[in-house]
Image 1 (cartoon, rainbow, N blue to C red):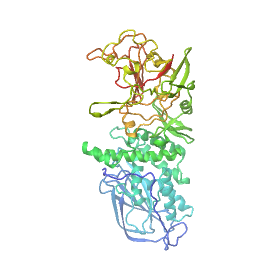
Image 2 (image 1 turned 90 degrees about the vertical axis):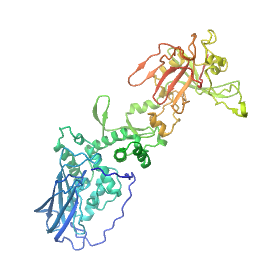
Image 3 (image 1 turned 60 degrees about the vertical axis):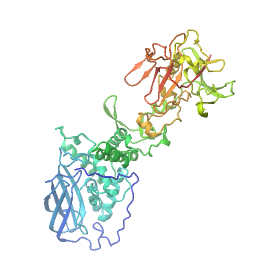
Image 4 (image 1 turned 120 degrees about the vertical axis):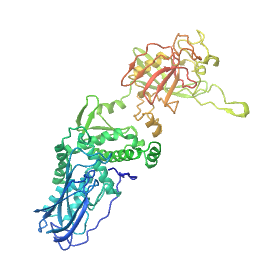
Length: 583
């Protein structure tokens, strides 16, 4: 059964101040009376991973009066009474307040309430001196053998419990003092309860036994997996890299899949619930899974959160992590490497890839001055296939007309550096709607560019893109940013490279596309006309499925889609940038 919740795991958990003020008996208890016998004791609780289903077995084992947590051999049995995993023991006479608890059965998954195929056993150790409630859960199971070992080494029981719970949570990056893991319940709302819920959900999602109905679950593998945590913690209170590399790898995959949950809040989820009833519970579970996975991954890799102001930064790591390779369909163990911040999440990258981000395409930087207005522009010069090219490395900003008064006294203010195609070509605006007469467009057409320069033609655009490995990302200004919502909506979460100092930025901020006016040398064409055949020949498309080379050059505006990473021809756009190339 899934309980709707409106609060989430905080990645900076609050500490709970605790104080043990009574005399302690070494190796046993914090109580001043030491080990005490109990008569007529009642104890109840809940057994949860997700909650164990009705009828699951629960065993209470008595320990000796020596206080060393050794069982006497007497056991008491009961079963869970409902699908919340609740159980009850009554009227117990015990030699010691310290008892060992075990619960075994199938469980209901936290995220959808479905029943697990496998039963699991969970253990706990607790003192019944001042309690009548003791829950059995993932945290009690993980700390169980560690507590036994610490007490066996002479540490007082209360100190052993506190240390073990702190070590268990710390392994996952949670800084939270929990006095007793058996006080926690996945259906309650304290910081510790929410942590237990997230940890339980996280563990369930690590392997294939969590999928209902497949009929092939390896139940012993599940129990061995859980016991592996307890066994590993028992020795030194830390999880071995062999375990953490799997956990961190799973967490990494969750952070990649659910990056969009980073900025989803309670209001967003209720808004979605209003539009799509029943979606709230699913979003809550996804949010919890994302938050906890992010915490685990950051802790394991030893890095801070990837935020917008760290966009493009990278960090080295030296701890093993399992990473699924989508190319070969296999999991690889990386012992070292880099994580790269794309403004939202850390992506694991090789050293070669990181080097490629800073490896500039060979070029020379320079400047030129437009004599018409004295404006200075950055330039780049490079050679490709035996020919030398010099481009403006900034958009042309020459003003073609002053602001003009229109009807009603309104001022028609031009956007600097944005032109119509006819303005860019220095043609009559009438050519926006009729064929361009042959001879008006030269092979190196000066258009709006200064003397000695011409508007970059389609062949030069193709050459430029070929030179940067046919990847328009390599032209993007690394300092350009869009807002988070738009970037997520457009699938844009990459780091910008600017490996040619070209400084490309979008013109259309809604669709994140840049338009540059151009022309095809020695071609007569019609820029656009109502009901005419469109000339949208592909200029260049780059994605993981298609790679078309340029075959025709009879287009007039280059569209560079920043959000989906492609370049193509298009009809004449009403607005566009201009880049000039030296003759």
